[in-house]
Length: 227
Image 1 (tube, one colour):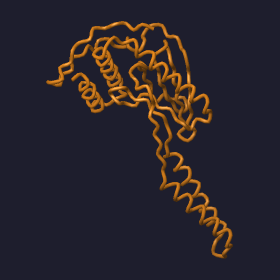
Image 2: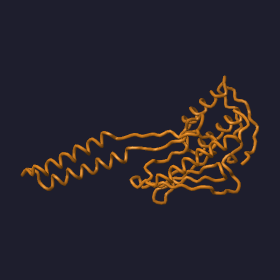
Image 3: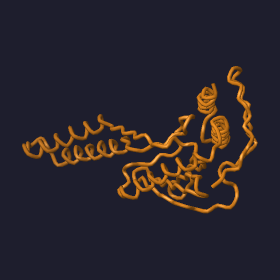
Image 4: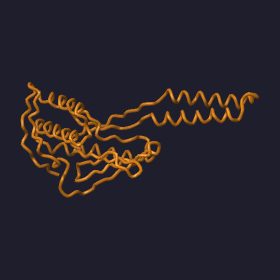
């Protein structure tokens, strides 16, 4: 899909003043008629949340998260502003896993020795503590793929690798990567791309997805690319 061209205004990186046209508004996320190309849902039963990723008009993405019917977050962006390859982030809560293993070992040992001082109540409490520790470890641990904005380095598309449908997840990630490469060709030059990417982050900040401090950091990264 050809992208509507907009005049690229130079950025004054020496003064740190942002000379970028910010009047394009919602045009950059396809404000006209929408055609849905792909939908991908992920559910987190522990957090009781649902995230829906909707690709529309070939190269835009809407991300919407909700909990028990209540919308938590909604934002949209152009796929061409994403880095083409996701970064895998895996963090394990080893402390909670270790505590769970210790409690399970204690319960097993107590059951095997069958000492008089070990009552059924004590065993039940130990097993309950094990369950809580294990649940906390799983809740706090992460295994996800993160697509960040190309120069702003903001996580815009995050998918969990815990999805039981691994083939479907891989197909979605592959499709996103392919679309990023394809839409990147719509830009005529580096300056135009950087200016549009900054506008995209500015809009996300105005909509509350980014804080003012986060946007300032993003702006400095993108301005630095103009030097």
